Length: 158
Image (cartoon, rainbow, N blue to C red; front, side, top):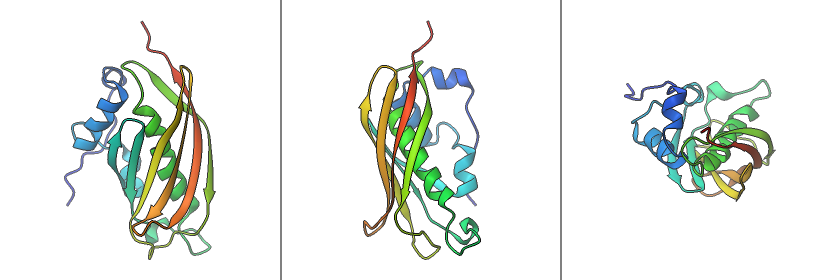
């Protein structure tokens, strides 16, 4: 049985930390893991300034009617990695939201794929807009999907 706690911290807790510190607290278990990670079975694996990795394993429970893992699994992993890469750049009190994400699914994920990693990397961090890119690869480095995102940054409130 897992000893992971799932939940969402209160907004004031989130705002009391810069993005990198907050994500590292998630990684260490100081804060609860987001419920979506339990739903889809993936975890935050690495956090560095401007770079975040999530890890998961495509499973039968992720299958769609055409016999492969639903694209939403890959898209959610990428959305998490790309957005959190940007989150890692936030100053204390800053917030953000995703404006758009573009995902390219280049080969199907199946329950036989094995573990995959979604890595997000910041391309640009401006005052009000940030962009990042990333990809999903298996343990051998084979590419399954790649993406870019644009996020809106909101300044800390005084």
